[in-house]
Length: 530
Image 1 (cartoon, helix red, strand yellow):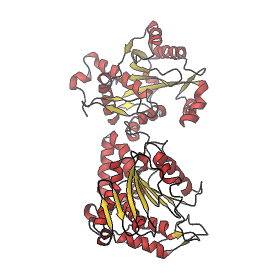
Image 2 (spheres, one colour):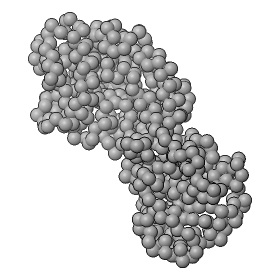
Image 3 (cartoon, one colour):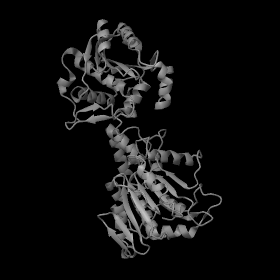
């Protein structure tokens, strides 16, 4: 597939494009064969986006004839031919880069992941008679030896012992987002290629979830260079994917994020995955991360944005005065968020469950938390969605008084609470005449109302008026599942606060159990299983 090549805008004025060098790399790769799917056995014709990368990396040279770009960071969704391109570049560095005793390493988080690119490269060598004749493939140790230049391609992983003392001429780093730490990256890129004139570090990955990782650091650097905020003349950035602001439901954006769409990946497959993401909240983040290359906040966003949005209709507060409701109370440690959520059962069939959430934070720590957590607590406080109590710890007396005042506006029949840290407040609230119900945090108690909450949200039956703090917490929730299919919110795995959702689940449970007082919805139709 031929196309018109324009050199990278990051080519230095002092560098030039050496067409012969670029052609050499392109021709070498074109003579390799595809190894997978319907393309297997066919000549590796580079797609335009792939050819652009190859020509930029191998054709743009400095005055001394060496490559300008020494580190390439390629971030792209899965199924775009990532492994094939990485394998082809590894083989070029081993066989055709005119490097004596080439040392090319394939790296990944574990041996299985590192083997993916290696296995593709191995098949490419086996399918090429000229390469096979001068090679020895050692499957057990994941090594390909090139007899003609005494070089080799060797797989490494984060599990392997020490990697110091390597003389790297080429590195293909696959799925760096899965690295447990930056150790392997630092060992392989810092100082290990100093004896080489133009070592190439080729990093290729999909987006990840950990924003404190080496991958996110490189991702940020790539974006900063692409947007002109940073300059690094030896760093080559390519990022295909959507940002948080882009509409992930728009097919035009899918095409922008997947440059191989229509070649290595069919639009039908992406549509199928999209439908699954709409139907199952566990799939949404997977779709965003793997198909659209978006950095997601947690491994499973339990309540996706489009589901939460179904309850955005404004709430008529005056009509709720004097009505019966149930509440969930999730007390924080004294320095953290405390959540109290009222749940009003429908007073007629077509009505929704109406949810009124309240949140408190210590006033003195608000600014610090905004800076530390990068969360809009201060904006929400100004808008009235979060209340603050004086001092640097949550003032429980203030919250008790607030709940007492609420009980004079609404008929709060029960307050479900997590037993942890709640003894004193429970006694005080009971002293005010409120009914307090302890609520277990295990699967037995949490699973039925959690599943019911999701079902009601899907149906648009939970009306919260678009409360932004509850929305944020809903997107933070990660659910833990036991072998029997029971679920509960996992505070440890959830990257950010989820207290409001926990309080909502508890309040909803009490509400459902007393609905109509004739028996619980759980008794009528059993517990939902997913």
